[in-house]
Every structure is written in C-alpha cells, then in structure tokens.
Length: 613
Image 1: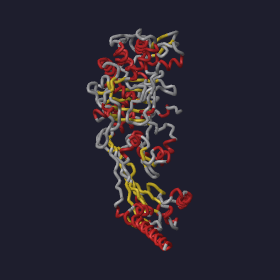
Image 2: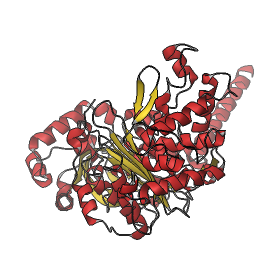
Image 3: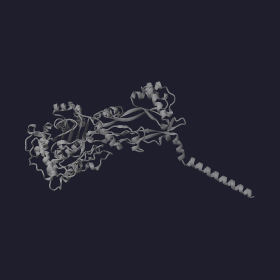
Image 4: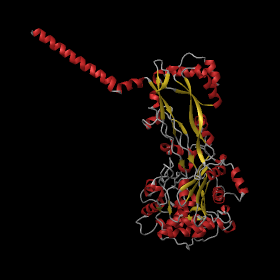
C-alpha cells in the first residue's frame, strides 16, 4: 500500500510538471509574441531610406544649396554568387581589376561586413545605372541605390556653405548612436553648423529573407516600416548676388570681404579669397588633394579665421575713446611733421599733409601723428595710478566694440583676435619698465592688436548704429528654425552715442571731400549714396602692406556696413576701398556706375605678391 501511494504521488507530480511545462510552452508560442518576433527579426533585413536633406536659401528666396539624384552600386558580399566579372565591368564601365580588388577586399572584411550591403561605386551616370538595372538579375548580391546629393545652382559662398561628406569612424565616435557607416553629414560651414536641422531622420523598409538570405516579401506587409523625415530648410541672411559679385571682385586676390546689415546684424556677404568653387563641393573627395595641397589654402575662411592688424581703421576707436575720456575734443588740433616724434630720435611716420589739423581732418587725411597724441593722452591721465592701469581701462573700452574676443556669431570656427593688456607688456619689458610711447603703435591699429575681418565689419556696423551692434549672424528665423535670442539684443559700447556723429562726419569727408582736399577714400565716392568710410594700410612683415577699408551707407539710416581686407594690396585706397564701394553700390543701386574701376578690380591679380608660410 505504501509503495502504491508513493507511486501514485510520483505520477501526480510528473503530471503536474508536464502540465506546467505545456502551459509555459503554450504561453510562449501562443500568447507571448516576443520570442516569435525575435526569431522573425533573425530572418528580416532592413533597407535604409535616406531622407532628403534640407535646402539652403538666400535672404531673397534663391536656392544656394539644393538636392539632385545620385546613383550608387551596392554589394552584399554574403549574397554574391559566381558571376561574369567581365560582363559586370562592361555594364558598369569599370576595369575588371577594380571589381576583383573590391571583392578581395570584401572577403578580407567578411566578418566585419556580415550581411550588410556596402557601397562599391558612388555617383555613376544615370545611363549606366539604368543599364545595370536591366541586367542586375544576372548578378546576385549586387544592387543599385538612389540617393540625394547636394546641388549648387549659384556659384556663391563655397567656404560659407561648407560641404557634406560620408562620416568616418572619428566622426561616429564623436556622435555616438547618431550615425553609421554610409551616412553623410555636414563637415564645414553652414552644412556643419546647422547639421541637426538639415539632416532629417532616416527611415527603413523591413523585408523577410529565407534560409538562403534572399529577400522574399515585406515584413508584416510593411507595418513596421518607417518613413524618412526630410530635413528642415534653412534661410540664410546672405544676398546671393552680392556674395557672387564680391567673389568676382576678389578673384586672384588673398583676403576677405564681410558685409552686414547694421539694423539687424545679418551678414549680407562673407567672401573669403581664394575660396572653393561650389562645383568642387558636390564631390569633395574627388578634389580633396587639389584643395588640401593648394598653397593659398582655399579651405581657410579668412573672414572669421584670419587675424590681422587692423591698421588705420582702428584710429576711429581711439578717437571715440578719447572723446569719451574727455581728453579729445573735435576742435583740438595737433601737428604732424611727417609723423610723431618721440624719445631720442624715434618717429612713427606719416604721409605728407597740411598741419596742424583737427579731428575731422585727421580722419579724412588718416593722420598717424594725431592719434599718437590721442592715445598718449588716454593712457597718461592722472586719474590712473600708472600707465598700466590706463592701458587696462583702454582695453576694456576697446573690447566693448567686440574686439579681443569671439563675437559669438552662429558661424563656426570664429577666432577671437587679440587686444593687449598691461600683462602683455609686463612680460615683454618688465613691470614699470614701459610707458605710453612704448605702445604708441596701438594708436594706429598696429603692434599687438589683431582682429578678423568680421571684427572690422562689426566695428563699421557699430559706427553706422551710433554706438551699438547686433551680433553678426548668418541664419534667419524661418519655419521650424529659430535663432538664439542673443542675436536680437543690442550690444552697447562704453562710448556714449552722442560722440559717434563727430567721428562719422570725418568718415563722410574722407570719401566725399575730393582727392584735392586730402580725402584718402575719394575713390570710394558714389554720387547720392553718402558713403562714410575709413582707409587703412596695415603693415605686413611678409610682403607689401595690406589694404584695408571699412564703410557704411547711406550716412543716415544705413543699410549696409562693409569691411574689405586685401593682403599685400598696399594703401587702403588701392584695392580695399574700390572693392567695398563697388559692393555697396551694387547692393543699394543694383548696378555699377564705374565700369572702368569694376573691370580693373576684377582683372587685378595680386597672387604673386603673397608669401606663403
């Protein structure tokens, strides 16, 4: 009886266990779909749908960067069977050696590639693609892919726009989880700065594959497919025709031109020369060696990445600080005997002009000696304990104009420039062992002062606005795209607005007084435009002086402020002033009334003057 009881209990226990096991199996197979889906996923393949990248427009609605179709040939190495190499090479119009080398490379990388498809040939002609599409059934494992690439209807702003390229491992590591091999991203310029908006979101189709890894049908009739989301369109502040015109004027010259709308801080043109032709951007890989080995460095955006001595245009800043500090009045006159004489036979030279002169005349004639007196009076004020304190206060005033720091534009890779402090000279000469004449070259924008052309254009916009500026920016607010609130806030200098008209009238006289009256910028004169400007000639230790010019117009209610910087261009009136004034006239009048000057600027070639590092 005991044995029978144990036997019965054992049978009952086994029966319960069997029921539990059957119940679990039923639950897993019939009620819980997770494992079934996991199994299905092992037999599915995803085909990526690449989104259309956002279009980039200029301020007037013209397309700067659009999209066009490109055709690629992809291969899934694990699906490839024996094929006629000669026939495939003939269809794709490539050498048989190219195909053999590629297949050998894929065999070596078999474990890393797995079941993925890799791109074998990019951007083949449409006719070649169609020819392949007709016979692709003969070549299992090979397939075509249609994708969008960038198109450039207007040759304007290659450096400004930037380029799109396939991501590499370093880029993917920097953006974990966002990109995978075969993806494209903006690498420079606006393409890089606004990558998040322009890129869009990838989608995919899911297909079932059989035991031989062949695609059979859509998975779940496409229920798990995801549509691609196109990128957002970007509207820039750039005027395409002005940008293109600036590039034509700067052809065969090294330097840059930056134009700003003073009332908004919007950048109208940002020219860096020599630059990249937009035709090279569409296939940057093809031209990379040519671009990277060019001694003139076309990838280098001089408008925001090159620091130069500003030269005589900086006299305007010192004049305004002198007025604010009360050490200068417009009627004050200083002598100039071909320069400023100091110390034991030292002189900071100047060109010949009448003497003595007042402040307006000093701007009109660009007198060096006048601003030596002004800077010395600023630094040697009794209210400062010593010249070091005076210099540091001067530096604070200068930096309120945006110098010596990044302007925090929305354009990438901006440099800060440099404005020296007392620490700079303490290190160089020793504390207490230098004075105002030691640093007198700061009076004319030389010495240790460095600024980008963007800084100079911003100075010009600040003058046009009589004491404030908006941070220069290159993107306009548009549907789905916002700009940082800081771009709408006024940035005030530490100089009262009432002082600016005193300087501006001198700038007007520099352009409109006539060459016989000593106006250094007479070449920039255009009837009825009331251009206000200031020339600069910046010393260059590696060659001829740099030609500098800033101007805005009209004098009342200015619509454009511009800075031109031409390396090795000589006097400010030689190249920078004509180029800037032609662009002002083009923007305000839509035409050029000085065809001979325009032709001379377009044909001028200064490349032989440039000395490379």
